[in-house]
Amino acid sequence: GKIRSMYEPVHGSAPDIAGKNIANPIATILSLSMALKYSLDLDKEADKLDSAVQSVLDDGLRTIDIMSSGHKKVSTSDMGDAIIAKLK
Image 1 (cartoon, one colour):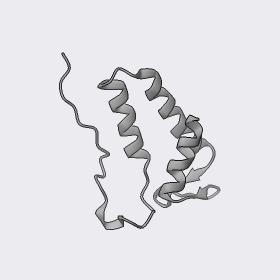
Image 2 (cartoon, helix red, strand yellow):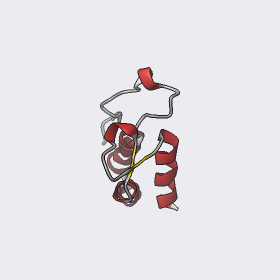
Image 3 (cartoon, helix red, strand yellow):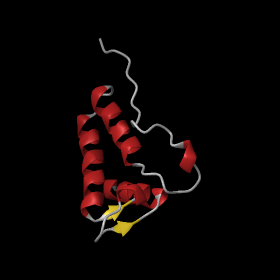
Image 4 (cartoon, one colour):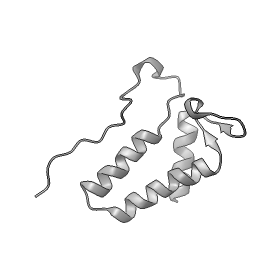
């Protein structure tokens, strides 16, 4: 059988920026992708989620922690909404 697993972004919960809408949600979203793939055998769904994240990054959206010249700075909720939109 399978072993029990936990999936958490390496940065943890980032309490110092809680409520500021500046946290990068990508690691949390990709943790879900890992759970889909490795615990739930939903490889196709995990791949779609990974592709949605990559597509948003390819579109140039960035949260403040990964912002660089030539990209568009977005909030936590904007990044999450953009990833969800790619899944539709």
